[in-house]
Every structure is written in C-alpha cells, then in structure tokens.
Image (cartoon, rainbow, N blue to C red):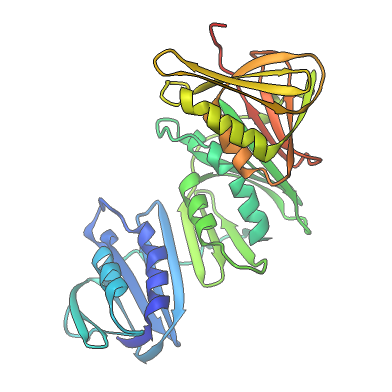
Amino acid sequence: MKITCNKNELNNALQIVTRAVANKPQTPILSGIFLRAENNILELQATNYEIGLVARIEAEIEEPGELTTAGRYFQEVVRKLPGDNVSIAIAPDENIVHIQSNMAKFTLLSMNAAEFPVLKPLETDVSFSIKDNILKDLIKKTVFACSTDDSRPVFTGCSLEVTENKVTMAATNTHRLSVKSEMLNEDIGNIKVIIPSRILQELVHNMSSDIPTDVKIACTYNQISFSFDNLYMTSRLIEGQFPNYQGVIPPEFATHVTVDTAAFNAAVDRISLISRSGVYNIIKLDFAENQIHITSNNPEIGNAEEYIPAEIDGPDIAIAFNAQYIIDVLKIIDTKTCRIGLNQPLSPASIQEAESDSFVYVVTPVRTNH
C-alpha cells in the first residue's frame, strides 16, 4: 500500500474514528485503526465492538492495500506532522508503516490487518432515511435525560420508535422524561429499538452540514447503523423493554405558566449557585401573582432569591426541583417562551416549547421539609 492524502482531511477523519478505539481492548487488534486504500478513497475504521466508526477521504493511491496500526500513536503523529500532505506506505513483506510529511519521517509497527473485525454495511430490510437536522433535533431534545447508571442499561439509551410516518425519541432516568416527535414524508412502518446514548452523542458531534443531508438508518435485532456524507457509524442496541412512558405524562394541568425561556434559565442558574453543593441541588419555585419566586437555601453557605415575571393561569403553587433538571431542559428549548404545567407540589410537572406539542419534558419534584 502506498498513498498520499491531505493532512487536515486525514487528521479530521482520525479524530472521528479514534473515538471508537478501545482504551482497554479485549484483544490487541481493537487498539488499532484499519486503513483500506482503493479507487482513490482511503477508508479508516475503528471499533471496540460496542460502537464502530468509519470515515472516508480522497487520496492519491499509488498502490492499493490494507494495513492496521496503533490508533493513538497514528493519530498523534498525523496531528503533529509539518506539511500539507502525508504519504503513507507499507511494503507487502514487512510490518512497518512509513509516514512522511515534508522533512518529517516516522515509522510505526503495523498490526495484522487480517485480524481486524472489518465493519460492513448491515444486511437488513429494516431501514429508512431522515434529514440530519431533524435527527439532530430528536437527539438533542432527549439524550440529555438518559441515565448514567450502567446497572440499569435500558435507561442509558434513547428509545427510537417509528409508527408509520411518525418518529418518536424518548429518554428517562426515572426522575425525568424527555419525548420528541417528528412527522416524516413517507410511511416507514414500525420500528422500536433502544439506542445507547454514546452513539447518539457521536452522531450529533459529526452532523455539521449547513444544508440538510439524508441520514440512512438501518436496524437488525441487535445493531443499528447510521450512514451520511463520508461517514458510517454502527452500534449495538440495548436489550430490554423500554418503559411505557406515555402513562407518566399528565393528561392535564391545573396551573399553566408561560415564561421567557432565557430569563428563566439564567435565574435558575444563578439561584442554584447556593444549592449546588447539596446532594439534590434543590431550588424552590413559588408561582403566584404573575411571577415566579425562585429561592435556594444552604445552611452552610447562605441563601438566594429572585423574582421573574410570568403569565400564570390557575391556582398558586409552590414546588421544589433539582435545579440541574430544570437547567438541562431550558438549554435545549428553541422558542423564546416556554410553557410549564403544574398540578400538586409532589406531582410531576411538564415543560414544553411555546405553541408546540411535539416536545414534552416531564420532571418529578423533590420533597422538602417546608
């Protein structure tokens, strides 16, 4: 194999795929990056068996071929090379990769490319396409609500459910629930899977086109793949039954509140400075007289309070929340104002975007001594 390619393009591709290189590999080959050169395309692959990432760039190929080399070292070498172009070569009868850029030359030991578990497109009839901006919004509005507790795997991923032409993504850690739906232009059928939050975060990280691009999603009983631009990503699905979350969403509320999203977010963030060191990061919200009175108290530090204006329709109510659960959702709301639905001090509340029912966030209040 002997190729030349643009250093920045190679570096960008390596930054993507090295995120799937195993830190503590089950076998040494999983610490490597696989390169395949043919038809003026250089393909890079990495996998840790949980997720797999593939990136493709254009290259001048003098001799097609394949090689695998230590992922972390290869990325660091390429990142620090001095020139605009990189030459990579390996002779058929040796196990040394030669890397050159301007006057800098490196050699890295190669690994046995035949041992690398090469990623191939999923063979399945269950697939559909969705615009990247729509998929990105579905993920952004839900993935933050996933649990980080690996002892309950079902809650560490997002439920993706497709029913005919409606796609819904949901996430919960049992204390909060976030659900986002979108209508598609075509009838897809029925799909129900749980996708690990990590692959979804990788997806969002790599979806950066200015013009809406199609993302092809394919599923088998235990795997899912995403294909767009020159990237291909695959992941294991989470086994298990996602809870029936529809029953958690209150059908109606006694008190309806409309408030400026940015002002509410900033005030909660400020007031929670006092409560952050506490176990539950509790803030108290009093909804009365068309304003929200936000307070926090920490006997070891001090207390804080702030009033912000709001439109309140219904009985007055005082309710306490984990401040971070409120801040997290207000960060991802795209509308200038948001709607809050309230019932009782210990009943779940909802936060939604103005004039839209496609997104709903349900949060459980915290029991306080007062």
